[in-house]
Amino acid sequence: MTRESIQLEAYNYHLPEERIARFPLEKRDSAKLLHYQSGKINDKIFHELPELLPAHSQLFFNATKVIPARLFFQKPSTAQGSGAIIEVFLLNPLLPSSVIGEAMLAKKSCSWHCMIGNKKKWKSGLVLEKTLMVYHQEVVLSAHLEDTEQASVRFTWDAPEVSFVDIVEAAGKVPLPPYIKREATDEDKPRYQTVYSKQEGAVAAPTAGLHFTPEVLQKLADKGMGLDYLTLHVSAGTFQPIKEEDVRKHPMHSEQMVIGRKHVEKLLSPQGPVIAVGTTSMRTLESLYWFGSLLENNPEATFRVPKLVAYEEGAAKSLSLKASMENVLGYMEARQLEQLVGETEIFIFPGYKFRVCEGLVTNFHMPKSTLILLIATLVGEDWKRIYKHALQNNYRFLSYGDSSLLLPQK
Image 1 (spheres, rainbow, N blue to C red):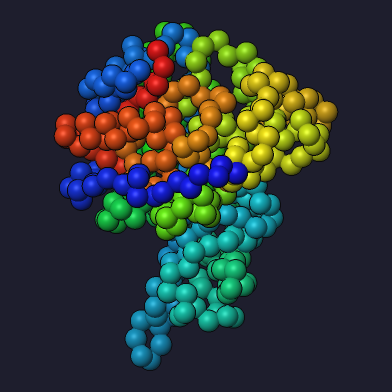
Image 2 (tube, rainbow, N blue to C red; image 1 turned 180 degrees about the horizontal axis):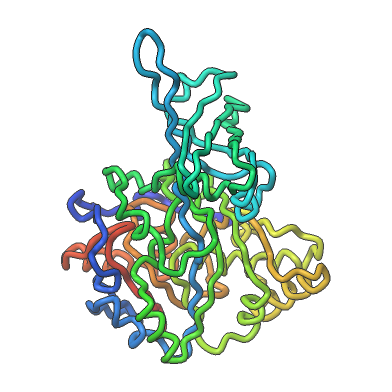
């Protein structure tokens, strides 16, 4: 591990409440785009992105799809009045599979680790019920609190042909980030979702992708840019504030990744600079590199990337990207795998050396957050100039805010 402590206060800045975007713009690609390249800052509009990227850039997007993860149940009424409202927030699946994509297709029953609002009022043994309309039929959804300490909830429903993803779509509300400070509306269902979202399972949007439109994607393709779609299911931990002054002690959240064989083959010999669309794509790509590195010493390693893997003794003498991807491809070929499912806790903070990514498309992030640390790792102390410029030039911040293209080198 790096021996130098990273002090949290060095990554603080003042974010006025009124600069946090509470609603999306009417047109996705009309957002402002701060263009940072080799130390220079320019103000652009997002639909200009295809003209600003280096030739033959290989863009990697996160195709995760936000699920309406907030489920509300009402306890039965009593003589004393209406029953309490219990909120069940889906975090990660336990049964029938811990793989999110598989769990969403579960029939009749499934179990999830959840955050539970009003938990004290949900006594063990009390089954909560909710009647839904799914495909024009009534379905009764039941919630059973299996383990109070672990907050594991088993869901059952009385329509055997209906999948859990259909249940969630019918019953759930969009899990807007806590800093937006309003209830989700019908408009949020399509807008808190990228136009290319595909794999259900995230409880927060990969917000860098919210600005892309079919027109911008087509322009990128027309200019010969590579467009690839990975999956990292964004967890609620992405909003977890850092409370440790020495940031290395922050308990980093774990997130599930799905990577295809074609992505590994692309990274073996990229045709141009690798540009991550969003911090989640960046974390996925860098995690894939470290999996290949772990395979160098242990060909049977599981695809689970520890928080501080990049800072351990010997990490500086690391493999080339090509050698790492060859290890991953060999692992997949030996097991006849077309895709990899893994977990990452990777923590990218100053001192980290990027092995895959050369640029980033991203929104503006909270002060003293893991994401600000990642930005500072990519652009160095210039992160302060970038954020100062954004604040002085009326950029909108956070999930529904404006965007930036960060290219440290020419």
